[in-house]
Amino acid sequence: MNVLAIQQETQQGLFEVIGARFEEGGFFIMMSILVVGILAIILLARGIYFTLKRNPGIVKMIVLINSLGLFALVLGVFGQLINLINTLDYLSSFEGTTPRDFADGLKTTMLPTLFGALIFLLTRFSTIVLNFLRPLPASEI
Picture (tube, rainbow, N blue to C red):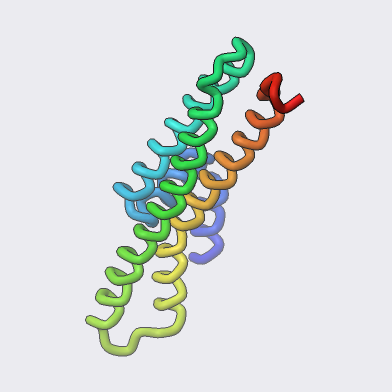
């Protein structure tokens, strides 16, 4: 029976696995972090456009991207705390819970923080790229 479950799990597609993780991590929090990540990607594209056009608004884009990354990270930690409270409430309502039950619950609480940290790293990397591409003002040369 266990071998059959492992074979079925390996046959799942990438989007099925990601969807399952989204549900485990709390769909609302995970989708909120995803929306923040999409906004950061849009601002990155706009920042690259501003860099190519030598628009001074690039500084504002860099600040906004950094703020969105930090917001995603904080949102992930907030989601972890909410999920941790729910998991502990759920486990305390049963007699004879095992450490394995606790480990499974703790794993699912860490998913929003992991996703928020991933978005945070991507936004930080994108601001490094934008700062590298940004032309220096004449006063700094």
